[in-house]
Amino acid sequence: MHGSAVIDKGALVETHGYAGHRFFIENPGWLSGGALAWLIRVLRLAGVEELNALAAKAPPGAGGVTFLPALSGAMAPEWVAEARGSFYGLTAAHGPEHLARALLEGCAFAMRDVVDRLADLGVDTARVRLLSGGAKSRLWAEIRAGLLRRPVEVAALSDSSPLGAALLAAVAAGAEPDLDSAADRMAPETIEIEPVAAHLDAYEDAYRRYRRLFAALKPMFGESA
Image 1 (tube, rainbow, N blue to C red):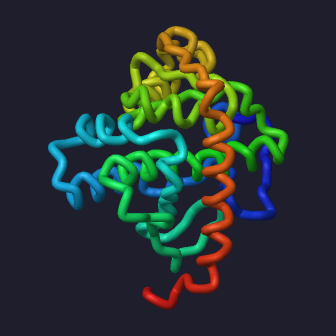
Image 2: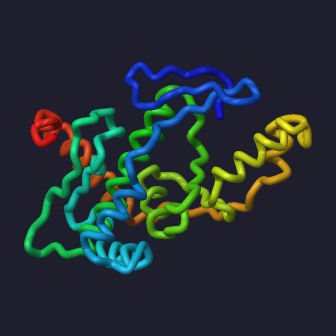
């Protein structure tokens, strides 16, 4: 939430009016959960736990493999509906563990795009809280902490959508005077995940590869649509 409207002229994030005379600033997302479901199906894995276990076997940077998370168009680092996903950097030495790690990292790259843009717009990004299904992966949290070079918080109650709906309903019904009071009564415990210092350079190199890959492929977007 933000106290004033922030307009992104680069159109990476949107600003919406929100209850309590505040504003909700977001990027609608880049199919992270859908990307996991897709790779689980392609590799014929048992589920998310097996994908996480595979990814943990590959090094930070996924051995040079880069995943562009644009399976249904790109919403980071730019909105390009015609963009398509890709794996780049594959060799005969790579295996499913590198694909799994690259996918987790690629989705985290897109998150960094959004966090960096929010910071450029003056929105406070000192605290990053992970919610919903993706927050249940310790490895993914460590990857995101490393890419952002700051700790991330994982809420003990990760299913935030129904909790937010309950808060709004409590205020609308008069059970709570305002959203701040309602939120204070339901503030979830969090676990803080620190970045691994030894991995920071690998993540920075991997992120730069991702941005170069997006720029290189951009002229081709739309050709296979």
